[in-house]
Length: 167
Length: 279
Image (cartoon, rainbow over all chains, first blue to last red; front, top):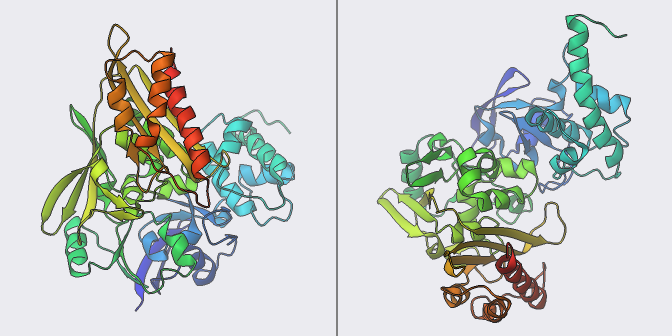
């Protein structure tokens, strides 16, 4: 027997009838076709499937889609706006924050929450915040570097738009 | 899998009374891993995640009431919890990464009754009470009376944890939390210790509470050690005698996470560290 779910994903309302056993990550990937969120381990360990549910980082491989009914979800696809990368995405690009790229969506989503809660995150804060995300390539150095660097990407851009444009 | 998803507490209690075999699901951080692995196929789930009223933290002049669905993450953000119950905050910060802390709930942690439940040692020393609710009514259990064994509680069929009550303690002279795991990040505990100590003006022990997790099928308060130390000054000789009593209160096993020998050794060290801290 299917159940109805309505979930807002990246600002767009989605409604479907789903099997109760459907995991949230499979709802995102297979039902609405957003395949940026990866499944790495299926056991809540690796963090590749991290999405934001109502602003909080959560591992979508161990949440049922029906539990997400009525919630507001952000995936990696929801970060870039008007063709412009999110500051954290830009920082990953600039600092070579990825190797194979599989863990990257989860890393970036988790990073958005870390930086939202902590406006002056140090390298140590970022490493601690990424406790639940594993990079199989062990590329942590550049991942952490990217996230720390992203903090100076964001305000610089805003300042540039406001007035003094530094080229 | 079938899922029942009530939106009110009354509906949840009525459904659970009608389906006492259902698995109440809160954050699902433990159950969903087992289910993904295939060991819980075909279960009827009573999903509690829509019960917003059980997500609240409320205070009275004498106590804090933590709804069963308050998450480990929420507990770390709340000023009053940080100020009055820092050991609980410390424990919550060691549970998995932030994604797990955002899902995992206090009530779920208790109902799951793992011997390695990280919040249990703090709840034991804070003398928590657990309020239960069923369609038939309410009842209250002292935290130490909740557990019946590994993964077993004294909850009756149809009964759900509604909230956890914590009386504000007098400011202790010493407070202590330590979790010992295989590594610093996202590890299941080998031993968890929590302690509170109040001293008289002359330096003797007015009250002492010390609890160990992962050292027996359920969390243990070290009642022998606690009563031995009452009225005594924790001098090196007294501490030595107290540490020797530890074996009377715990009964660790060899399992996949650690050995009895290691757990005993570490626990003695933790008790010693707690009693000597600040002196």
